[in-house]
Length: 250
Image (cartoon, rainbow, N blue to C red; front, top):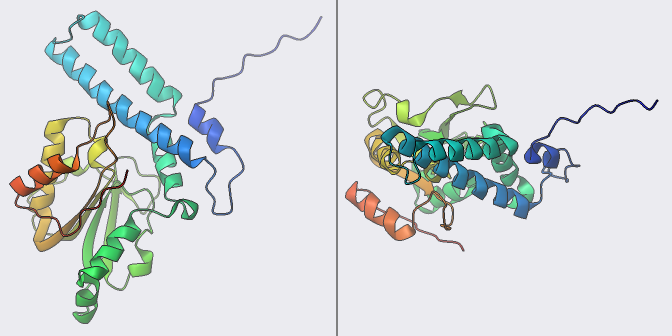
């Protein structure tokens, strides 16, 4: 009799994709599919937060039972995509040299244009930078002479990245402690509008007078957890922040 085949364990789509042969720079995923997966994660995380809130407040139009079922479907899809670790891996791949590198290059370029880099060097000072949502520990290694980075993330993938929820950081302990705070593709991963506002308020409190916030958000799409440039402008003005540079890409 032929041997019975053992059923294959289902593999998250992102894990299967990441097992393909990497390119010269170490990246292995197609840029388009990587962006698509990251956007899908953003949509699912926002939907998950909405359903959890509806269940807690009993406000779902189809009743709590349907809301619970919908939440289970969303959580199952997140798991099938590989969970938060897969999102981090996709984002890290997106920072590969064959994709133009991470957004830290833009921040460094702007700091140089503003004269901040020269000012720090002339004063023989290293600027304290809090990098929220860091995927790599050495993004600012080439600027070690004038930038003193502290990378943090909700789920650290490296011993040199501190595992820390930014929203749980002690406000008094960090008040006016930082010269620069980087929120690169972090704000749009926070599904709740109230906490997005809290995050910006905390940044304002943590920055020293004359400090700099580097804020990068994804292009707005239907259902995505993001804000338009005009909305960001309104919120930052309300917090007494102002833009030195504002760039929008399609």
